[in-house]
Picture: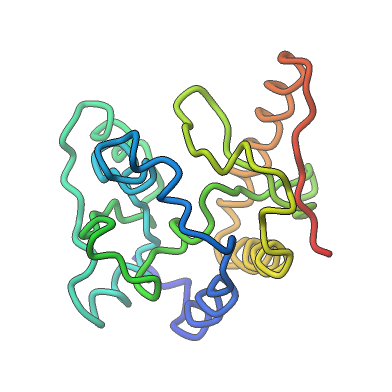
Length: 194
């Protein structure tokens, strides 16, 4: 596998996303109703995805992340159909979580880039769908740190230069999100840089 993401790029991405998204622990919103575990920290249902270089970088600096063996048919199928530059991983869970060790995927959740047909990142939108139960998706825009929004948008723009496949994926995701919102008679909330 050829290396695409340099350590310099990784460090920059982590700096961009080191700004806090919110000023409280969002796990306190959903963990009490989920046996004390935040929904996004369930390794069995929310398999963390790391980029290959990101995984190697973390492993070089300790054993926080481990490869996630497929435990269900759904996860196995998802892994088989996914891009070869992903590593499906497992972390120690919320009790052993260290912000500096979180994956890029963890640090951007529950946001996704909102991308037009030309590949321009117009802003961020919150994940949606029947399986999403993140309570942050229902919070008003003022809940989120504007600097985090700006940095996250910049992160996605830079990531797309490293992984153009991700840009194509999110162009498609944005179209699906728009269609879903139209069917439901609503508009997609878009978070833009201040």
